[in-house]
Length: 82
Image (tube, rainbow, N blue to C red; front, side, top):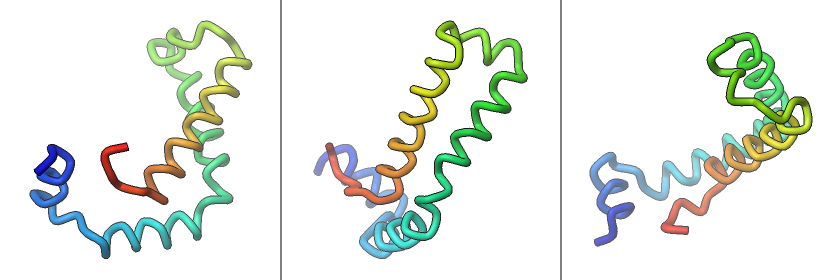
């Protein structure tokens, strides 16, 4: 059993959970850019957090896009080793 399979078994994450996340993704996919916008709007208000942003708005835009992709893939799956 792989580490991921072991972890999923330990927390009881199965097909029903994958299906629920997929349904949730379908409901919120269009709003994920708003989540990313809000996340970075708040991040830049905190000096220690915003200090890691050295590339200005270009970097923030790129990171927002990456966050949307990450959220989308986490919700839509597949929830496997890849």
